[in-house]
Structure formats: structure tokens, C-alpha cells
Image (cartoon, rainbow, N blue to C red):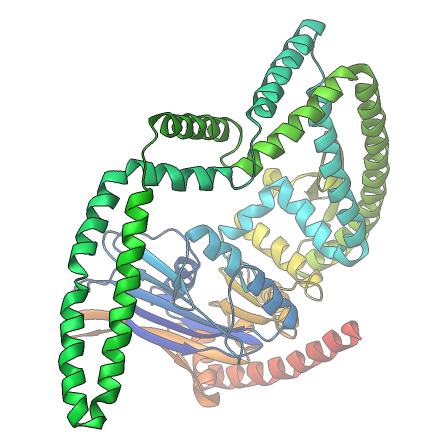
Length: 564
């Protein structure tokens, strides 16, 4: 879950530190207090677009930090697959520093790209604001929701389809390589024979290049080597060491304690003598054979040309040789091999068709169940006489996920035909449809934290009460963070935060603080009463809060029963 949110110098927020909890977290405040900034800060931290002038006036940069607590072993495993390693207590820290000319995103102090950031945080948090609901307008999202709903039942089948699809694509590409006329086939065979002969005639050997390179270096630097060794020979003057040895021997005759120094000089004289002898022998053995040098140079040129042409190193050239031999053999047996590939391709196609058909049938069965549950949820959310279904279309090609294209369709008025969501639903209706879907998927959705922004746009009364209950139902198994202006939703909160705007020293600031029981009642009264908060409004707020807590416990019991 998202355990902490820290914001610095973002728009109206100079500094905000929020400790969020499990269950249902609600944020309320006056219009214009900065509620949208809070969701915006999370969106930006997750790699979203940075609005212009988002850095607070007078500040050099803005900073957002999200601290997640990850306890699920499966979630930790998937994060590690993405090279993210939570601390021992499961902590993952996501931060973004925004400067006038650039921004830097980090996960656990390691800089990451925006793409990787979204990939990682997509496992941890899901934001549903007014714009996010627009994803329901895309067909691909609909099939994704359906597959999520029946993931456990279809998981093995989808894996088999993905594996078969890989084989299908490979054989399809292989078959395409055999679509050539006789002239092209003969031309390719001639070229392959030339390349094979070129490599084989070179008679390459493992380690040959390294050995020749070492010898080439010696030939190329012969004069430099001779000059350096001659200078070294002259520098190793053993007469000086011999004279020193004689003098120490005279002294050691008077003091036996100098015997060790005498022995060391004796060893030094012997070693230096051996070194001088070795240098002299090497110099005497040096010779320069112009013909041999040219042969080495020519051989190296041949090897490196072949490496550049066929693979980079000698082992890669050998691998290319075997591949070309295999391709030549295939072209020599062209008709037979092509027939064999066609048969394999036909078998895989039949297998893929059968597997995709099974998945399609499974999806259609699950779609009836899912759409009926969503329809019931929409009725609860004040969609009167609503019809909700899913229409399937078979693609003219296979994909790794089958051959289905599916789309949710809806009718909100009796007698009207079912139409795609984008042709019928408004922005507010899309948000409620998404809430109904999230309620149905609450038991199977693995994303631990859900943020709902503007979920209550355009609703009130009984519909607002139903929305609050569905949010509380989801919060029984997920961390839910909701920004709202409706008392029906706020009264269901496990933790209630107030967002307030104030002016001090000519500067406008937004602050956020958790409310205790008494202040929760006061905030509910404000949401209920509007301009004037009477004693009756306060009593109403206390009663609403009491009844909401009772209803919330009933929903938690319902959730536990469903899970068992």
C-alpha cells in the first residue's frame, strides 16, 4: 500500500507530509483548496506529464516522494524481476524531482526512465480520475478487464496459445523465405557455395589470431625492443655490485653480524648476472624476416576480413559457416523442405485455431457472468433499466492472446439498442461504470492501492450512498484513496484528511491534516450544511457518521463471506 506521501514546493503546497493507512482514506476540503493537486502530485510522481508552472513561486524545484509498503511475496517477486528490491520491511521509495529544465525520477535512489517507472508502479497503484475513466473507450481495455476477471481459469490456456503463436510466427517467417522462383533459388545457392568455400579455404584455427597478433607486435616493434634491452643491459652494471660485495666481505671479516648483508649482495650479483645473460641471449636471437612479417600481416588481414564479414570473432565465423551449410542443404532439398514446413505450419495453425476457439468460448461464458454482475452494480448506482453486455468479433489473424476482439455495449433507456460506451456514456457515467467494474474485480485485482478522483461528479442522494458503499466494499481488500465533496462518501472513511487553503504573509498555501473523531463530524457537517451549520446539521452529521460505520462493518463481513 501507499504508506506515506511527501510533497515539497508543488503549486500551492509548500510542504505536505501524509501518513496514509489501510482501508478507506478520504480527502475533503473547500472548492479550490487544492484537492486536485494531491492526486496530481501522485500522478506526476508515477511518471505523468508535468504541468507548466507547477513549481511553487520562489522555489528552485518541486519534489514528490511516495513510500510504498509491499508485503505480498508475489508482488515482491515481480518487482525483483524488474530489478527493484524492496527493503527488509518491504519498503519501496518512488521520488521525482522537478526542476525548470528537467526532472529526475528515482526508485530506491536509483534513477529510472519514465517507461520503467510506469511499469514498476503499475504493480503498486492504480489511479482512477476523470481522464483515466476514458480508457473504457478503448476496446483493448475491455478484453483486458474480461481476462482479468477469469484469469485463473484461462491462465494455462493463454500460456499455451502464446507458445503456439511463437511457433506459428517462426514457421510463417520460415515459409515466407521459401517463396522464391527457381532463378532466385539457384542464385542464392551459388552465393552460399562461394561463402562456404571462402571460409573453408581460409582454414581458420581457434586461437590463431591471438598468436599471430603477438608475433606481429614483436616484428612491428623490433627496433624499439632492441634499443630498450640494450639500454637495460648497460644499466645493469654488475661491477658496481661486485665492488660493493668485496667491501662488505672485508667488513664482515671484522663483524659477523654483517654476514646477512654480504649474502644478500652475493645473491644480487648472481641474479643481475643471470638477467644480463638473458638480455644478451634475447638480443642475439633477434632477427627480422621481411617475408615472414608480410605473411603474418597478410594472414591477419584475411582473418579480420572474414570476422568482419561473418560475425566478429573466429567462433562466430564457424557458426556462420554451419548456418550457411544448413541453408544450402535446405535449398538443395527445396521442395521437400518446403513441403515439410507447410505441414508443420498447417498443424500449428490448426492447433492455434483450436486453442483460440477454446479461449473464445471461455471468454464468452465469463463475459455473460461478468456483464450481469456489472449490470447489477450499475442498477445500484442509479442506472435505471440499464442493459450491459459484451460483443465479440473474430479477428482475421491470430495474436499471442487469441483471435478475439471484444467491446462492452450499453443501453441506458428502455427500447434503445445496445451501443458502444463512447456513443452513450458521459464522463460521469463512465466513472460509475468503472466503479462497478472495480467492485466486481475487487477479489481478483492484485493492485493494492486504488485512487478515485471525481468519482462523485454529478451524483447525490441515494446514488451517492451506493457509490460510498461500493468504495467501502473495495476498501475491505484494498487501500482506497478517494477525493470527494459528498458527505455520504466521506462518512465511510477509515481515515479522513482535510485539505485547507490559507493565506499568510501574502502567500497562499495548502495544508493537509488527519481529522480526529470530533473534527470528522465537523467536516461532515460542513459538507452537509453549506453556508450555515446549525446544531441540527451537526446532529445529522453525527448520525450519518454512526450509521456509516455500522454499514461499513456489514460490508466488511460481506466481503469476508465472499472471499471464503
